[in-house]
Length: 241
Image (cartoon, rainbow, N blue to C red; front, side):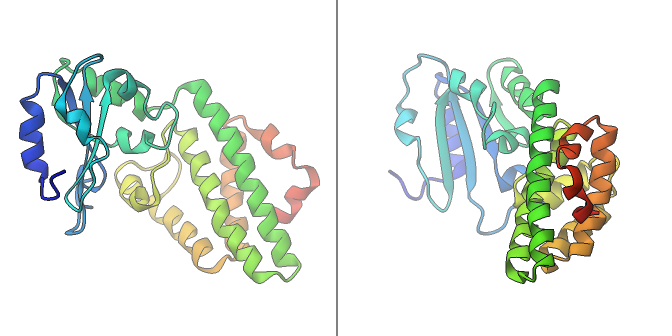
């Protein structure tokens, strides 16, 4: 395996292989302005189903310069549906598309959650968020400062899953959260204020900050028809208000 293989060299090699139907760049280099001197190129190589290619031996190739995933078109179609790779593919860049826009069309499908999928995800993640928020508030009440703060930070994962699901979008990885919100704001949320609220909870675990954020989340969740997911918590919601 060539440890010095560069992105440009590989793209030229892959483009010359007739078995390759698509090249898709993910990661920092696919997010304008986020790549640093330490960023490698993360490239997905899509092969025609049933095709034989020497590039298969490079699946899993990983160096400081280049990280490769080599898969079939069928595998690429299913990738992230659901799965951790969904956001990476949703914000990827097409380097090569030999399917007359077919690769781009598949990526567009990954960019938007289906209506049923999104509603289920929004309800489930709302419950996850409330669960950890309640634990944080309860621990704070009982004088367990570290536990309260740890639960506060953990709750933000469920919160972000919920907010992005409401907009039928996959949640971005933490590295890309600010980038995503600055370019594609969540409807009904002022990006700077939301990021400030997330920062306050992360930095301090403040119960007041959590309650202020929950008030906004609750109003939006009820407006979206998810009141049942909140009401299932009964009187415990009083601790969060």
